[in-house]
Length: 358
Ligand SMILES: Nc1ncnc2c1ncn2[C@@H]1O[C@H](COP(=O)(O)OP(=O)(O)OP(=O)(O)O)[C@@H](O)[C@H]1O
Ligand SMILES: [Mg+2]
Image (cartoon, rainbow, N blue to C red; front, top):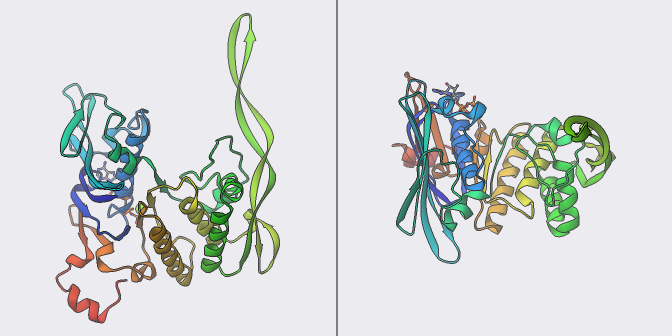
């Protein structure tokens, strides 16, 4: 469970501190370009570092692009706890600084049970960090779902399929859920019906999918690799709606697919414990937005270790939250992000009598 995040020289964040309340549901609000997605990104990198030894700061995510222009160092620090059954407090951070020869050098540091430790140089994972850090961060997902990707027929050869960042892989994930956890599939269906009342039943059927496969051939004793397109049997989502049965996903409304995608990620048997959602209300009617937040609250109640952090522009969504669940971001004239929790507003007590949170 995350309690605090500090961003230093991360894009528009010079010194941003977010303190999360104990509700496990937190909104980031503010004008365009105020730095909401950047907070989700910073946390996503942290979780990727807890996941693998792949150097995540290569290529387009090179540290010079995420460090505030003109600065030569940046850092992201998070702290929180893991309860199993006793509370284990932890702190983890990554920082990058420019070296004399224009290269960048990383440092990961962590602390658990009050024992500090760190790795210097090209450190690229929290592999050697203690369990509570890995447990808290490793099962995170960061989503910016796109309805057309959710609707695409897909194929997965993973033991446990999952929905990707952009929404691809929905059909195999649902198929897995229906077979392996029928009770969860049922409750997903019920929740979707609450958000989009026209839905009757969620289904998955076989469909053709084009996949690119790497092939190797031997020519004169040498291995040559080439890519081959192949049509294989995958799956696509079909929905029974109040307007007709077995309607293929590509003909289903955008908001319905987005809600289905979100619920599939949250209700999956390999459920994540940190879910980072960008622009959570996209495609949803105000009533559906309210129902979505009610559903989020129920899912959180059933899962002690689940925390959801999302960005939104919707007052209807914010209305369903208390001021301590809302983090307001704003750029001042110099473009630097400032961030405060809504319950820190000097007029909050007066406002609570008169206004809704949104
Ligand atoms: N390296 C950098 N140095 C300084 N500022 C940067 C850097 N990279 C990005 N930015 C700033 O951060 C902004 C991106 O912020 P972000 O995507 O987090 O905004 P947002 O609050 O999610 O906005 P929206 O509501 O439009 O999605 C950019 O518009 C740019 O002004
Ligand atoms: Mg954004």
